[in-house]
Length: 149
Image 1 (cartoon, helix red, strand yellow):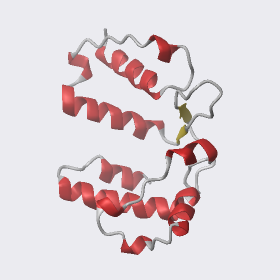
Image 2 (spheres, helix red, strand yellow):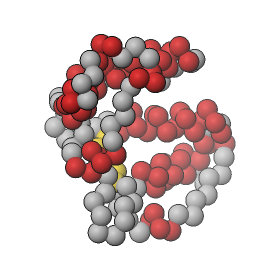
Image 3 (tube, one colour):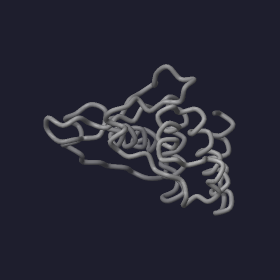
């Protein structure tokens, strides 16, 4: 998994992206039972997936009804949840390695906006603050701390 994460963070062009996306797909089919079963039930032979646009997305409903994790992982470091609607089940995003998650949003932020340390980041997100498990609050809080303001 760590090697695959290194590949993800070294993408520099479309060819790199396509290669890594196909590797991630194969990894998920092999190591995430929920996704592997889904692909199997669709009657798809993973070996025949050779283009990024052929990769099937796992329906959002599965994140409400299943624990979507790789087989070798017993639990997540942190769990984010969708806001949902009152009385409705929420989707769960189980993050097994927070350092990869943090590298992802920090690197993406820097690509588009520059280093957070050079920007004053302010956020007004009252409805998000009222609930636990918001990935947006987690990211904004980390970036505000990175900005030093």
